[in-house]
Amino acid sequence: MLKKPYEQELGHYIQKSAHLITLISNERLEEIGLTLSQMRLLRCLWNRNALMQKQLQEELLIKASSVNGLVEQLLKKNLVQRQIDPVDARKVQICLTEQGRSLQPKCEALFADFEKTVSANLNVEEKRAMMQYLEGIFQKLLQIRNKN
Image 1: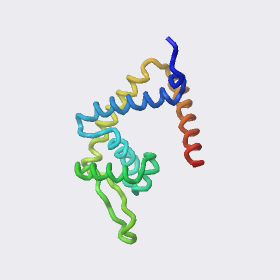
Image 2: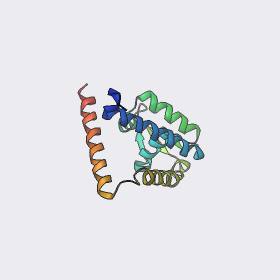
Image 3: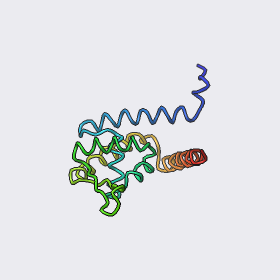
Image 4: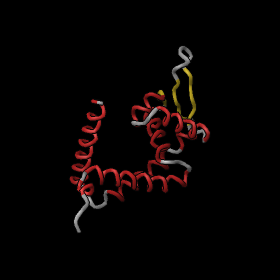
């Protein structure tokens, strides 16, 4: 069967794969009451403990309003808290709570298992090469985005 023109595009399969990763991840995270977007924000904080909302926006590659929405959801779940800079009230850091920190082992285990399943058909060298290719595509896309 002939493939449709868009089925011959790298972006088509990258987008479809990313969509499936999101769906599967959300299903797995449902048991601990998180979405993939929420977990990605927490993951940023697990690595650094506290970040400004602007830093989260840049790292997650999402709009300020999206970061704010995620932060609001995580505040309601008592997973993060806001800390206002005493010198400049316009500066707000997002910090983990103990409850937010406590989710790290469970989330990391879920994603380690998922990574193992997804890459099961690749040997070590193939996985390394795939990571390099995807990183190259990502860097090229960042260059394109930053030109605009």
